Image: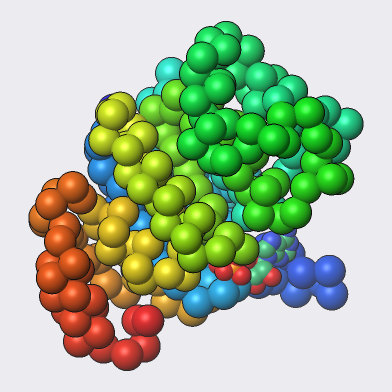
Length: 236
Ligand SMILES: Nc1ncnc2c1ncn2[C@@H]1O[C@H](COP(=O)(O)OP(=O)(O)OP(=O)(O)O)[C@@H](O)[C@H]1O
Ligand SMILES: [Mg+2]
């Protein structure tokens, strides 16, 4: 499977009546098994780009080629759970055929066991984000789109979930697109990093990471971090 993104422009009409250019031309492709990471300043257009890629916003110039049969797992920037459904029901609604054992494993990995029957209003933001991750993983996606999924989690938990995302990606041929502000997450998870400009976003640098995820030692990560630090400043 392959995702081809070829956006030539995106504007919003502002409430005041003007127009607001959000995306400049952005073009890239992702293959199954690859993790693409979008890194860019707040407000540059990352979430807008994800909505376009998912087909949730069709009002843009350009085209997106997404395999029509691709199962999609999505973690929005806000967890977006159904407030009148429990944690377990929220996940089951997205993945009605999920086996009980698989669901139990997801809840264990995401440390949600104690919260199965809670409702979203009873959860902290970090817990709600974990439920959103469980829901995205539960559908066994071909295309996994994660908009800052590890924000508002403590470092230890974020690290464990990052490892779980890496495991999921290693176990299935999934195309993953991750938005993060964390260089550490980017270099531990990404195969290709796309550094975006301020709005209207375009790709300033595309940095491939050739070493397979599982083989990135701390020494390698230090080297990659140094390589990124040497990129021209306006890209970070
Ligand atoms: N529905 C909308 N109508 C008008 N303007 C919008 C709309 N959604 C987003 N914008 C504007 O588009 C720009 C990009 O927003 P977007 O949410 O894509 O940024 P982002 O890169 O995801 O930022 P962050 O890192 O803060 O999440 C912002 O200037 C925002 O105000
Ligand atoms: Mg965003």
